[in-house]
Length: 99
Image 1 (cartoon, helix red, strand yellow):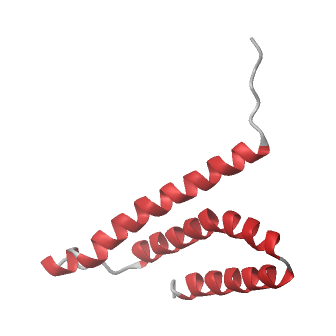
Image 2 (cartoon, rainbow, N blue to C red):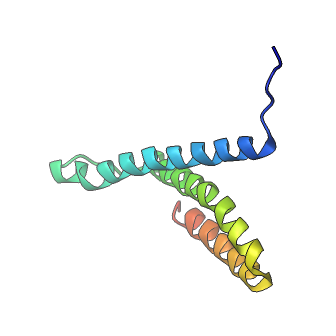
Image 3 (tube, rainbow, N blue to C red):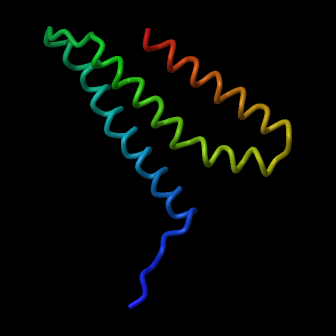
C-alpha cells in the first residue's frame, strides 16, 4: 500500500483552517469574558487576557491573509500595495492593543 503524501497546498489549507478555528474559539471566549463577567462583578482585566487577545488577532490575520494575498496578487500591483499596507496596519494595531 502506497503512502499518500500531503501537498504543500493541503498543508497550507490545514494551517489556515487551524488559524480560523483558534480565532473562533478565542473570540467566543473573549467576548464572553469581556461582556458577561463584568456584569456579575468579576474582574477580567490583566495580562493573561491581553495575551489571549493578541493571539486571537494574530490567528485571525493568518487565517485571512492567504486568501487576501491570492486576490491581491491576481489583481495587480495596486492591490498588492494596498494588501501590504493593510497587513502592516493590522499588525501595528494588534501590537498596540497589547500595551
